[in-house]
Length: 236
Image (cartoon, rainbow, N blue to C red):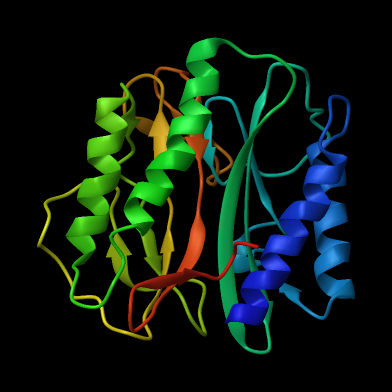
């Protein structure tokens, strides 16, 4: 899983090199697909429950599961990129949100604080903690910074399959939920909105957007529970 996570990290780094105004989301998808295959991995999103691409690219008010197309990225967009890489039978899942050019201070803070919320959640990971400790830490940080928490979408366990138990909501009560044990691997992924928390699905049956069309940000790491705490498998 560490190897799968490292390839996921390297793929994100490759995508980052090409992120600029004028490039299409389909071009980014192709770059990621080719990089994963070249390095011996499998882009798990491709064909997953019918998803037609190797990575999800969600822009501005799109929360998750945006389908790559001929749409071009432009100055002032925030772009969330989320995908799963399979290597040697194991999965790794990670997401990042990028600021393209200049955005409002509010939107910039949304992106920065969503990433910080992820790390607030990760700090709670250790044997003996509970899923609710992660959830509560993320929710508390989000609300302290004026952001709303999407409730319909959650993090998850991960291993031989992309989605495994337990679910990891980004809201909840401390000391509640499943107990964390050494060897568990979790995909922790806050999805936070600048406006209200409500979301809806577009007619493509994949793309989730904010109901009030406010910007949304998404960050995710695959994290293993170790004897003394945690290790981030999709980091450097």
